[in-house]
Image 1 (cartoon, rainbow, N blue to C red):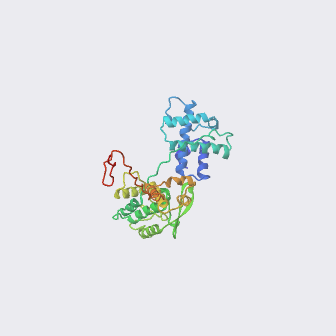
Image 2 (cartoon, helix red, strand yellow):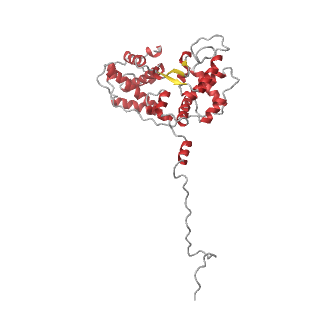
Image 3 (cartoon, rainbow, N blue to C red):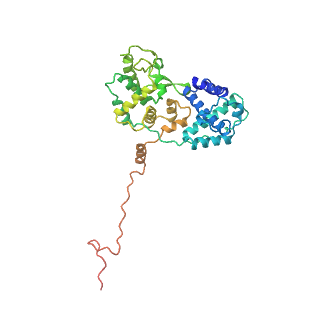
Length: 350
């Protein structure tokens, strides 16, 4: 656990953070977010309950003195006040509020169920704010091909960069999963990757991925004075494991070269792209897609199964009534119509 917050929180919160990291297998980044969310919450509680000076700036409120008495004094009404505070004064989005509620529910569940330090859970019935599901951004099939074509060939790391983009677009892996791949993780046509919560899964490499890896490996260490991280698949110019930021830059440069910059695309959007293309063009079942992406719940995968405009257009064309034409309506003459050769008009009067 990072030193900066291991010494900045009271023992009961510290124990919770250790539990989430070591027992539940949460990543360091996730545990850091738990700490930040709990610090914000108990800073509010201290301010709201008058447990600190009224003149103290919110960011200066120390939570080291937060003990079980303070934690157990929290009521559902207090939490509602906190939700109002982060909504109105801190302008937290629905997604951020949902994350903070989830953190509180995990914390109090730990205290009541796991550590058995509290008898009642004040947030047991607290609902998580609804998050509006928006259509994820992604590249079309044509744009994906353009991206691969426009990887700068004069780049000394062309094979590496091309391989990175190929894996992103074909496998749907996360940024952290890609940079974490080791040489020993590649075996024939599979790769072992480590996802959220340190959960390992096996992904299959198609012909494009295998060809890209095969082209990259012979030049992997070429031009490097030394390889410091010999087991890392993707190396930086210094011979160390490539960083997340460097991979983001590679993707940004390729998007710019392909004329696709400024559209809010990123490494994570390439994950969206891979999932979308597999679903729309490959006919991959949603449950299989969930396994490929490493989702714990199939419901998470549903955001990738959005239907494209082209699919809706094609579905409309395939309607069994699509070929039915509007019949020509027989015209009924009215009294103002002039007689024609085919219509002799009224008979002459006698």
